Length: 200
Image (cartoon, rainbow, N blue to C red; front, side):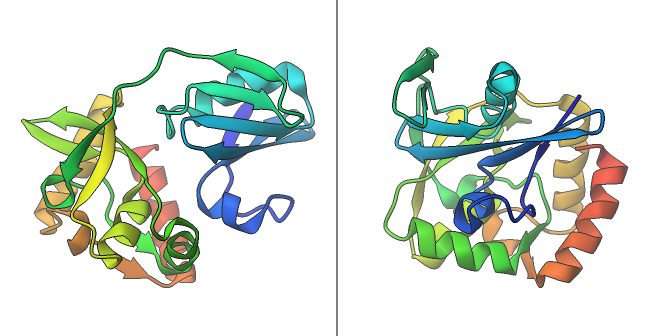
């Protein structure tokens, strides 16, 4: 069984897909679709195979670990986790762990998140706060002229993340503002190569 964070499948809501809240499970020859609707620290989910939802929630929380209460689409309670401590950081001190931003996704996310709070998973690596995900959300906030962003501490895959941070610094990417925004086709092509290289 493989769980994919799905930014492409048209079965999902376009904007929810752009936010990274959609997951496709491939199990043999079958595909199952899971979509999370996040509001604050809570999320409703829609799925077509409930027996897999715990595995998918675990994958979802790698990117949105601050979400700690989950409901079925009918708003019946499903599961809760311990509350995650969040705090604010200046955007300028957050070191990226990626190199590029998808222009199309940035435009969609900017329209969704205007004047809304975002939460970014970070880890301390070599005495720096490093963004593990959410670079596009940070860029959307930069474009709103925001100076601070909500973050929470999250575990990370040491070697792959360390390598990406090292490469980012080697290419003078020391904050999200210095990341290059690429057209969707170019972004997808380059990211496919990087994912194969870094296995993330």
